[in-house]
Each structure stands twice: as C-alpha cells, then as structure tokens.
Image (cartoon, rainbow, N blue to C red):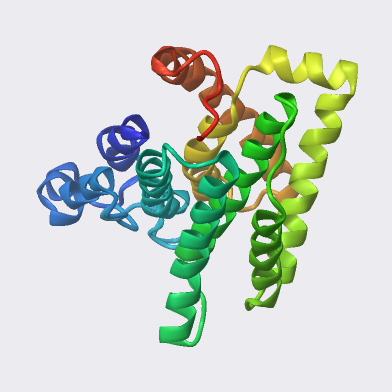
Length: 258
C-alpha cells in the first residue's frame, strides 16, 4: 500500500512547493486531511500545491483507484473462501457474476457507469484470465458458462460511455506486454528492470505535476521523456526498498481457486 508516497507528498512535496508559508501550510486542515488517503478516502490536493497547473490542486490523482482495488481483493478473498469446496471453474463464474452485478446495479440505479465499478469488472476479467492460464497448465479449462459471462462483461464494457476507447487502450497495453515477453530480448530487458509497474503507478502523477509546475514551457514530448525516466528511478527504489521485501510473504506457488 502506498503509505510512502502519501507521507512523502505531505511531509516533503507539500512544504517544498506550496505557495503558503510553512506555518500556514502545517496549520491548514487540508494538510493533515490528506492522510485520509491511507484509509482509502482519496483526498485531491494539498494547500497551495499545484494551484497553477492545468490539473489544479491535484497531487496524486492516480490513487482514486485504491478503494475499488481493495474492494476487488476483498470480494476475491470472500468468493474463494466461501466456495473453497466448489469446482474451480464455478468459483470463477461466481466471481465474474459478482463483479457484473455490482456494475450493472450501479448503472441501473444511476443511468450511467462509474470508473470505480468498471475497475471491479476489469479485475474480475483479469482474475478469470489468470485462472484459465493456471488451469491450462494442469490440463484443465474453464467451463463454457464462465466464458460466456466473461464475454458479456467485455461487451458491457464496450457499451459504456467511452468504453470502446478504454478497452482499445487496455488491449493495446496487454498486447504490448505479451509481445515483449515473447521476444527473448524483451523478456530479458523486462527481467532486468524488475517489476516497476506499481511504482510507476503511484509515483508518475506527482512527478508529472512537479515537472509541469517548474517547467510549464517544456514541450510535451520532453515532459514525457523526463517524467518517464524519473518515475522509473522512483519505481526501482520502491521495488527494491519496499515491494520486493513485502512479496516475501506471498506464496511461492500460484494458488488456483478450488
């Protein structure tokens, strides 16, 4: 969990970039309220920070997805635990059904979708895909009703407002990663970089905002290049200093739901 980036934002980034005096910054309610993000109550900004940026006041907009992500893991754990005696493909079917019901219920009630619930659907589809890969290595497969439900989730995503563009983006990313791993040199390069994905996720936004704050005149291409390099450095440090150590508590062998 990105407690580190939240603390760094309040204790270092805020005092460094705020337009307020230090005394006013530390006495402002918004400074300490930002720590609510640790409780999955994402706070938008810090007092006097990034006020002149195009995305004004936003310190780390990426963290909005922490709540839905946490809920998705809770749902996964509950389904896997309560249905531990069921056949493997049925547990995946139930998981997908729960995710679909949550999104459909919200759309039915409000007449539109919400990214928070779309994240749940994507999580469920990803869990289905990984479960299928694990079963295939054991000579099994998912049942056809499970695949039908997965396709329905995909079609629902297409029908949502902006769903086509988001799904195309996600598919491009998935294909790029898959292609890179299939190439011998790509697999070696990714292996040397370790797993920087989570660090890129939590550090990219504040890095980009800081660069825009200091160098608003830069071309977007230069911003992209410098932000990518700096974010990868922070992600590498995060991987070796925090995430890699935390993963020691993860089972060494992937667990297939039963």
